[in-house]
Length: 134
Image 1 (tube, rainbow, N blue to C red):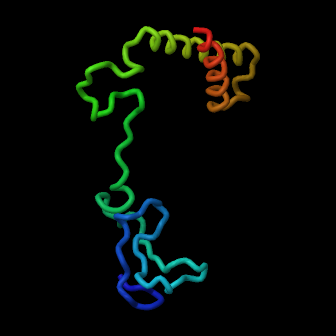
Image 2 (image 1 turned 180 degrees about the horizontal axis):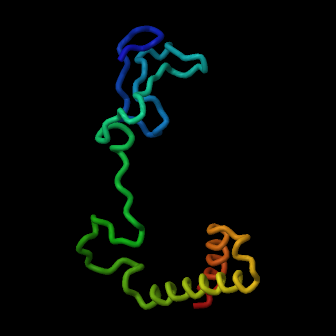
Image 3 (image 1 turned 90 degrees about the vertical axis):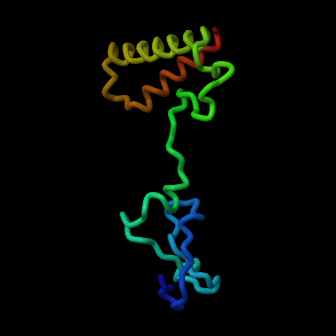
């Protein structure tokens, strides 16, 4: 790909990208700047970036926090959240707090005025306060 300003061959920087919005190609000349004063860059059209290159390839698939990481497939000891009586007690307490918050909103006919994030915040506040007593 040629630079639209100086016609030099642009560098493919997809493998070095840390920001998905950064250009896929960059002019090798540091003095070749665009209107905003940034180094001249170019993007591939959306849907044209192969999945094995660029920013998407650098991102590991996300694993839920509550699952055992693959690197610890055969542990010597259970992880802190696995099969401990304290953990089971905290899980029960969390869901009891959640049910209590929902029941309180329903009894006061306030449920429609609260979104999911606000309900989660109410539950977390109650759970934190009560978990300190355990």
